[in-house]
Length: 222
Image (tube, rainbow, N blue to C red; front, side, top):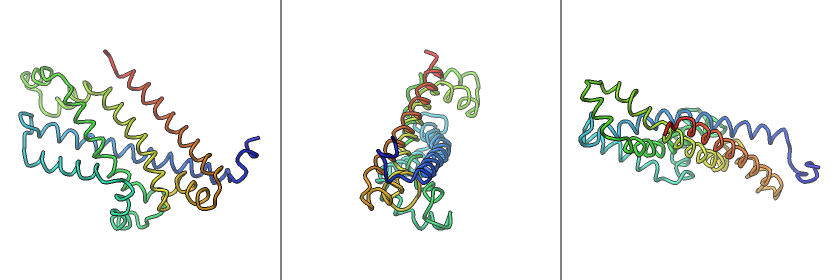
């Protein structure tokens, strides 16, 4: 039945492309979470009246975040081709897509982290400071626990955006469902291949959203 609906689909290629999409999304989400969290912490703590208040560092970090989250992803991929080639040794394949995916998504997540921290009751932070808590302790015991639901929700949104980024990266041969849909589907006039790739991308997005919602709900103690 399914073969008759999708006569041009090479299922071995389709499953391999699905694995590549999941791999690119998972790896880029992991590094985006780490780098975005660090950038968000720096943005928050170097703001005026915060523990590391520093106008220059805050401004430089803010400029970096604003610039890279504003560049359209397809243009960012092209701009980073020399860097990717130097770092990975090639501009094709799933690993070659990772630098652009991470650099494109980490600043976006950093802003979500900053918003999450800004929503924390200032009195909680001040109470910790008045008790002599170190900056590291405040980060571990106040900022991260108090903002956990928002951080999880933010990385869920970012992860879903990364699925879309992997599809766009497919245009330059990064692998995954985007490459398969473009090369085997669109360029060869095989709409069933494009449709199947789209369905699998949607399934991946729905799974990420379901897991993210469940973890957010579990983390929210209100």
